Length: 294
Ligand SMILES: NC(=O)c1ccc[n+]([C@@H]2O[C@H](COP(=O)([O-])OP(=O)(O)OC[C@H]3O[C@@H](n4cnc5c(N)ncnc54)[C@H](OP(=O)(O)O)[C@@H]3O)[C@@H](O)[C@H]2O)c1
Image (cartoon, rainbow, N blue to C red):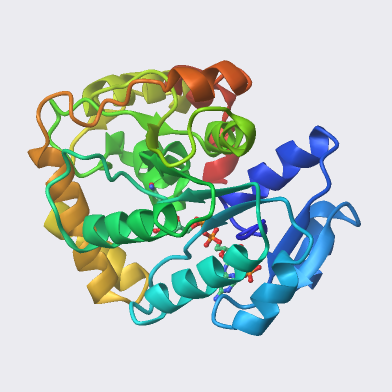
């Protein structure tokens, strides 16, 4: 399990442990595993840049889940991917589940992020390892960013996602993403495929704002930023202007899709195996919005 200490991998580990599956979690800092999972996981210490450590981490493993970290250093990305595929290739896995971590449907106009996702997905599927690629859409958890919640609570404005108000899109809850990833570890008939995944209930920004209004205790209006402005703010917040420009291009590309191009139909094989997925309205209802503001 790569990224076990992160937003995507954490729920995969917890859901596997709840099913009684033995998990080996890879991290650069094993102390994080204690606070997250107690003694419940086997530890492996490895940086994605360290091929020898990755070989050791894969030894004796049957199934692996992997995603690339936020691409702060674009030079490192292909090296990380090549290292994991080389180490995984020697481990004789029965299945590798790789997630692109973001929307990358066939219809998406190309840009830096989409190109990198497609290249990574192609490399995984051409690796000779029995692999499945998952392509999740935008994470619902992005809505929990403290500045977005504060803006909704204080000004009644939702500026995210930076897309046309008429754009209907599918969101992905991290718990659903984990359930679908676990389904992809064993499902028959999906090896070699790249599968778009999302939680149920595609919404426009106005519909999303209306549902948030109920739980924020005030009317929330959708007033999106332009992708460019969003990317600039993102780049400044993460001290990485290139990353911000890449994110801006990604949202521009989403808005160039055909009207239902960002609406993801459920994959019947994965959804049959996954536990029940959470529609966006239910996910919103389950969050503790007030304490997020505090
Ligand atoms: N679609 C969306 O809406 C959306 C939203 C947010 C993020 N993303 C994407 O999701 C991906 C990040 O996933 P995340 O949010 O789960 O990340 P995260 O919460 O930031 O966690 C990153 C994980 O990657 C591991 N990691 C980072 N660098 C590593 C390295 N050099 N070697 C080994 N492990 C390393 C970390 O492990 P340790 O620190 O324990 O070593 C940690 O478990 C990125 O591609 C990002 O662009 C997409």
